[in-house]
Length: 166
Image (cartoon, rainbow, N blue to C red; front, side, top):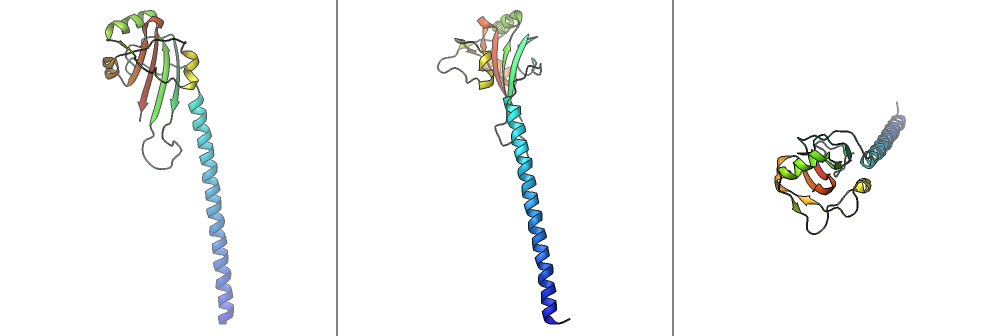
């Protein structure tokens, strides 16, 4: 084999390797982008969904009892589609219509003080479940007893909570 034919063969092999590698990298990039777009779409759908299932208990939010109605959402404050290892924080917010007896018991169990200043931020998907003019109350003892921050409107038997789960 002459030097020229050897160089031609080596150049051809190198060209094929580079083209194959480049095409493979492009394919992986396109696949990753498609998977990331799918993940972003799924997360957006999860965050916009208002749920009504009975996931929340007295252990999570003390005093909710056997509530007749709940609406809650989940939020992914960190980038949930990251491939980096580690926990993904989830934030939750819920609006709970308490049974009248549970609302009275909750009002009697903890010291609730009126919220002064700005009202708590209610997530857009839940605002329709909070009537206008609600006068919220807070209790540091209540928040310390569970895994959630809570705002309570005893006269409306309404509880708003925010929780973080890692």
